[in-house]
Length: 205
Image 1: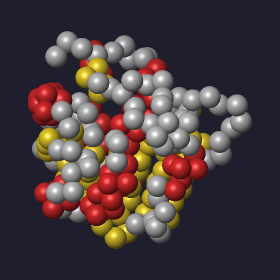
Image 2: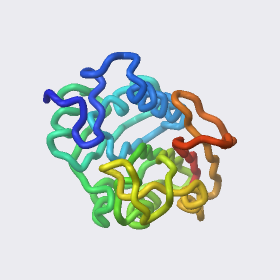
Image 3: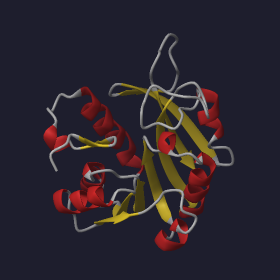
Image 4: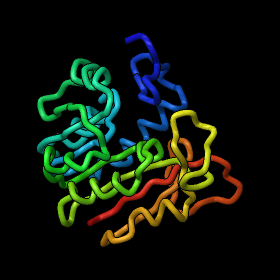
């Protein structure tokens, strides 16, 4: 594989260590790693670097990690380049209603920069709820924008939620903490004047 991206799938080995986009992506996994425990799902895992990071950071706490991506070539790359005995990569559609029956339930679910690519975000969230065990933790991120159904400047994004719409995705969870990611930092209060930033939610079912 010679491209730096497959769609928006990052390949760290082909990027300079100080690449800003790479650092942002790595920061999300480092932010989420302390929440990872038991059986973990990384939905739309991309090339697998994040799965590998989390399982190495949490080698005592994580018993199994499943990385799912829509693209078969990307799954093959992840299996080859980011192998770990506790990690299994597989092809799957995050909105497929059969996915929960296929994968079972999880103590932790990670979903980074995925929901903005999905036409039916409600089906996507329904699958995540079905796959998350009671008391389990979901960590999900997505860039903010003009709102559901509105066009974006990003060619691979179906839409980008407003901060209000993003928060509403997690109605029904027992606990919800919302953060804003700016570069590699995470804040709980949105600053005025930001034109582009990423929402991060940590939710307990």
